[in-house]
Length: 512
Image 1 (cartoon, rainbow, N blue to C red):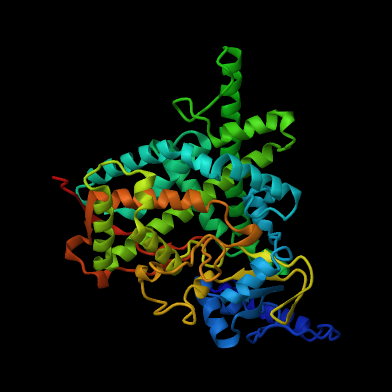
Image 2 (image 1 turned 180 degrees about the horizontal axis):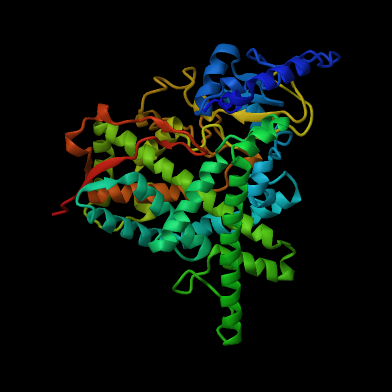
């Protein structure tokens, strides 16, 4: 929704204020060589040119008014839009330290544990410490190996559920539930998806993601904070933030009580909630807090922030990659057949898929890369902010400038990619470009200091489930639908899902 819609009831008053502000702007300002900019309106800047899908709006503005670098003004916030691999390299490699900070957004403080999440924490010692804790104890290759049993158990559950669906399957829901269950088990030690409790948990998180991706006028035009209050947005943010904090506080307290009970009963004090004696991420965080010998200090808020970070970063983004990958396969039946033949040839009649098997599925890796190229989970990444004045590609960028990297546009650059809007996995068969942050032509997870630390976790989960579903089922669109009938429109949000859920027909494959 265009932000000006919220201002229509008070338009006469606003026009008067705009006139006062516009004609009383200070005229003395040092001369700067700033990047190209589209025309802007007083006070609101370019906000009126931003639609529901940010990456599309920025792509259009960059094409018509900017180029690799473009400066726009979102209200009072100068924002540098990055739209080429070379420009992204300048930001995330050459000047990575200058752009290592995140914006201090009031709404983020309310929703994301006072900016103690790794993804939004200010650059500094706390951020380095928190990121190290998350990588070593949740996202390292060693930890991903220990989580294998959980992934395999949840894949088996997912396969059984699909078999019970009488062929018609809502894969969008399947992927959300699967990623939720895997991440909840490795993070909290249990699932929150069954029964009344599961429904309440899902509803709370759906609203959390919706609010987190919503429009916060106060962030762009501070004196319009009253509009957020009038439309009930502030109250909703406060309520959702309170619900999330209350949930996290409850699970931490429950684990502490269980641990104390185990200590008192001679149970060793493990307190693991993972079942089967597994130690989950929350167990590890509580041990770190308790053990002074580690030299690491984390308080209760930091524990809740890291738990929330693990959950939010590992569920919605992973589910949307699976959703778009499968949608593209169904839209391109010949590609689906090539991939399915590869999976079944590599397995050669085996029922269980190992990591070694997946390593041998070269085309599967190409399919996932191509899906990430066309459908990055967060198309504009999480914004950065300049910590000091700096020159980028000959342009002057002032301290405090917000930076938005449009990886959606970068991955469609015709100077880099042949037929950039076509789904062609084979382009990666003889191509060394990867998504791990070294090749700026493909950066769905970002790069540099603020790149996503959970790439291996996410892609291991994606490849494992995708290989199993292609191995065990044949797939087609319902009611004899054709690939051209498949709706590929995007749903606005923090992460970009399909607008229409992915409904498919699954037929168990006969291995005889």
